Length: 82
Ligand SMILES: Cc1cc2nc3c(=O)[nH]c(=O)nc-3n(C[C@H](O)[C@H](O)[C@H](O)COP(=O)(O)O)c2cc1C
Image 1 (cartoon, rainbow, N blue to C red):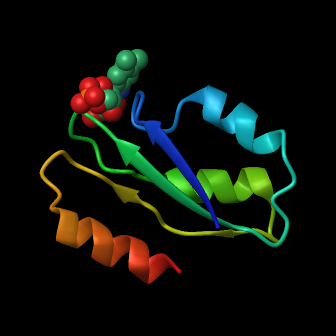
Image 2 (tube, rainbow, N blue to C red; image 1 turned 90 degrees about the horizontal axis):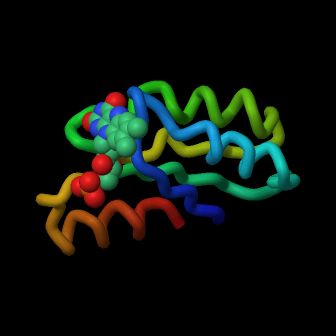
């Protein structure tokens, strides 16, 4: 599993994240996007990442991690990803 974390910039993942993701072969991996933001949700980031990495990579819908998330909720989310 590969976790890809980034801030939301202008409603989406920063272009440098796209550059990073296209520079590696993630075949057979699972990518889990997660983000921080000033308030925007993660939006259509997952579908954009899917189009970048190709059909043979599983990309989770991902999650925005707000500052208020509890440790228990974070644990539940990460355990559900395995
Ligand atoms: C260039 C730039 C664009 C941003 N665009 C958004 C945005 O569209 N929506 C949003 O909620 N936050 C936006 N932010 C805020 C960042 O997502 C936020 O600062 C980052 O997730 C880090 O969170 P923190 O400042 O609480 O540490 C932007 C920040 C920058 C520097």
